[in-house]
Length: 94
Image (cartoon, rainbow, N blue to C red; front, top):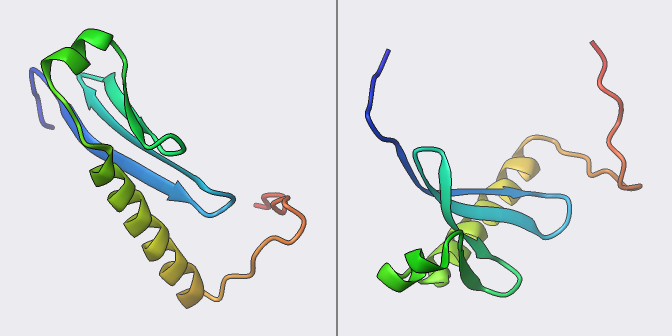
């Protein structure tokens, strides 16, 4: 078990295949510091004063999301993936 006074999560990103969807955020101790609005291609600070103290170039996040999309495309092609044609996922069975 690891114990820490503070935890920083920098550059958390994910991409999902259904539609142009992804997210890129920075957190400290579980609180969001900022995220990158992928549509507007800009950094959005949780508290405006954070943006006055430091900066973040959203291009880095956009590159990471593009890499995530590329990797997901490769993984789905290698896994005998059949896309959902009607936009609905099949029910989960146990």
